Length: 549
Image (tube, rainbow, N blue to C red; front, side):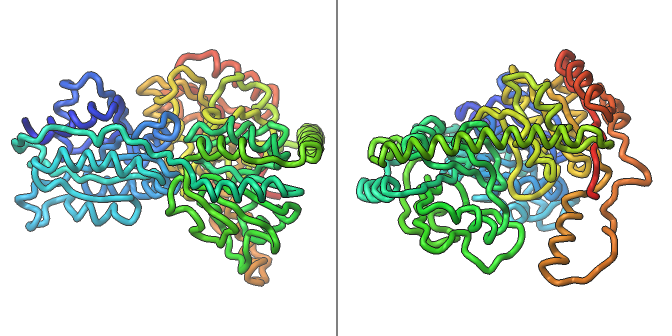
């Protein structure tokens, strides 16, 4: 058999049915033989970053390993930003790139470079297959490493001549691997005692709750304790329903503000996340003095990585929480009272958001709150939201019902352009769902080629582009910078407006085969959404919203 046969057999042995890619010459052994593997669907992207972003979100939406085929050094370079985002999101991926014939690498042929070195800083493992005899073991190890907690991307360079070499080493898997260990019993007992004694407990739920299917156990623990539940400011998934009575919302992105938010609690349990991705430096702890800080992680690498703990333990999310539910014994009456108070607060929060949108109902361009309430009212009950709304994200979270894992996906790492590309991966992974991608106009331009892929594969996506003709988040960050560094300025915001010419997303979408229309009124938005949901294939709606005052 040939190296390429082992490569394809490895994908099949690991249950791979989709590959995302952008074709190139050094991928000829792969592309020319795709027809021999009808079990493998190739999702075509016009730009490497779109292929990687789609594979990352596909992995998050399905729990399967995302497979990507890129093209030599420039193609890999184009994809590095999205690989970084996938690393931050703990997305299990195997990124490959065709390499030039190893017999001429010393001569520096066109497009060649040390691909493994290029990818190493943003992957868990990066290597090049040197001989066909190594293909089986490298692919086995790549799948294992990508799926070892914390999950993440792996890179494998595939030289064109190695793909055509003979080998006797057939494809093999690592076998069934059980990676969710039971936590240490003593540690769990101590945690249960501290949580039971807490007068005001809180939980911060990370993405691993959703990945592990541990939402029910999390909610059982929170309800038994009467604990408020928070999620991280930047997250890839929705670990619990955003309208659950105990769900408080999203933590801030700076340490001092996180500490202020947690100041009303005496014990906090961190579950399954990096805790925390920050935006601005604060010379402070994210935890107020006297707060007992507990943490459970599926990987020792994330346990107490950035902060000291009162107590930490390694354990699978689901078994750990199921054991904790049994072990805690809070004052039942006090816990019930806390649950009631949290439920009342949640109800008031929803009423406040509705009132906020009503107060803004006359403003044009539309206020973000009004646009998000309009969108939330029109969404099908089982819709899946892919979000890169950035400054509109707080309103989206308050206005749209997100019923927990599987209903919401977003990007980590901070690199923009993930929304449109990610929607491709989610739609491929969930073909029976209506996918709605909500993106800012600036972010959309980083991966606008994704529209062609959506049309080419006739994917069930409605792209909602919030158009305020500016990089609004950068304007907020300029204000933050000036304030933090005492920069006195009466200047405006240099190079942060997207006008002259305006971005005509309707024209761009139609040029790539996507139905599109622009709206500026809530009634127009509702009608456009109804048409888009009823149509076959992808649609785009450009929504005019107000910018930064």
